[in-house]
Image 1 (tube, rainbow, N blue to C red):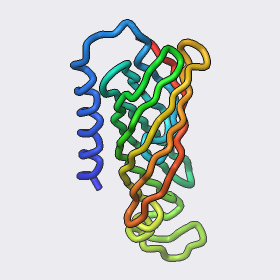
Image 2 (image 1 turned 90 degrees about the vertical axis):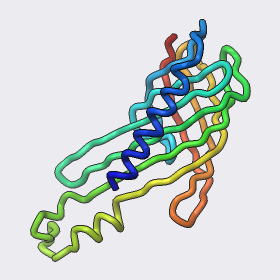
Image 3 (image 1 turned 30 degrees about the vertical axis):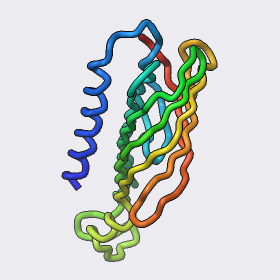
Image 4 (image 1 turned 90 degrees about the horizontal axis):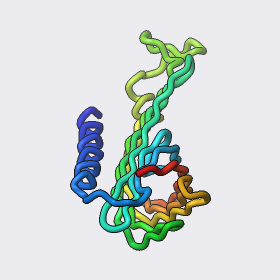
Length: 174
């Protein structure tokens, strides 16, 4: 589990490093916002929408309450197909990791109904998911700085490949 997480973090760092060497542009190209998707990651998101070349998107969220916890992180590499002042079209490829767990199971192995539950198998069966995907992303500026995105990705998960939508909204700055 930790090896997969380290691989994902390395992929995010690689995406950021690739775009860091790009020359400065006089365009709105970096944004912070919120995204929901099986590859881009659910939660708070940072996105770089270059006029030419490669960009990235990374998202992360973690929350925990008395009944459950949830963690999700994702990273995408974007290749510019077309970008205007109000629209952008990108090819995307990325990787994501998700972990959910019902915290009602205590350390003695009993759930809230005092039934014995195997802690490790419950976690594996209901919680951990990772996958890779690729697809296309369309971005639209409703106002100059507020960009909406809609993606369609093919996500590989275990032995299944599914078409999955993704959505996001980002406030862009220079």
